[in-house]
Image (tube, rainbow, N blue to C red):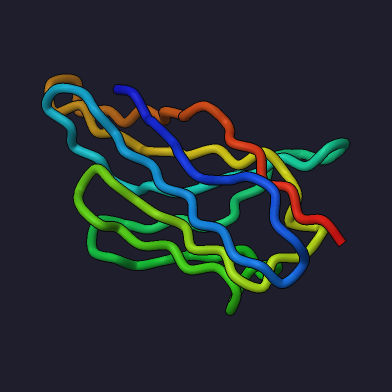
Length: 119
């Protein structure tokens, strides 16, 4: 399973960015997809996640500003509005994938993409 993330970049305070993530592989059965971020000197934290039925979960710090969408079974986007300097971090796409052969789940991560919010 490979996760290809795109988007990110440099934006001013109050601006918007959109991150996209596409999963590829054979016989994909993806449960939850989401985004995590790691800011310098901090631990990785969950930003937002979404299940197959569209149930979304957000970190308190982004609630009302970020929106996660599940565009298809293997694609997700994160619309980030009203960005703040504290949103600056490396954002990574995540997918929890079910193996119907082993009947186990595995977590996969995409390459990180830098989001920088300048004040």
